Image (cartoon, rainbow, N blue to C red; front, top):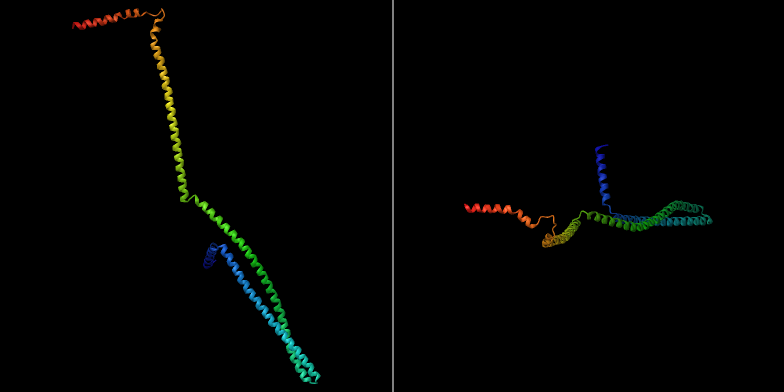
Length: 258
């Protein structure tokens, strides 16, 4: 493969890609209908010209046929008058018109066939245009719906990356954080209240114990009067403590003698 062939193929491929991307279905459909209508106009003109040509040929055929009949009558008249030479000349003229009429007849048959074909083509093209118009409206509606769906999907896909959505998500995060802080503050306040009640309950328990101890202390002399006989009396305790007092007195005297 030559270099120029490769370059040509690349250029054609790029051009085809550009054309495909630039094609708008709605515009192409509209242009297709316009092109078919232009073809219809040209075909109608061709049919009209063919019919006109057929009519002219038919007129010429009728004229030559009429002239041939006229010269036939003249030849008969000349023979009746005994003028054979004139009759011969009339028959020669008649033959010329008959030959022309036969040629026109063959041409007229061909034109008639051509006109019939053109008329059938015209009817077929009109049917195709009518069908194309119906399909065009349907295809345009489908193309518009597909385009709208594509735009909607593109918008939905772009929402996740848009600044508006990012700002919305930031505000949502702030609200969630604020709610979390409020809940934490409420939990702390409830914990402080629980601690206060716990302290009150604890202090009330201590107060109860202090009151019990106070009652025990206040009731101690009565308890001491009821000591068992096996315990040492108070007087005996004081007697046991006398040596200590003696030592204290001795120290005092020593100090006084200094």
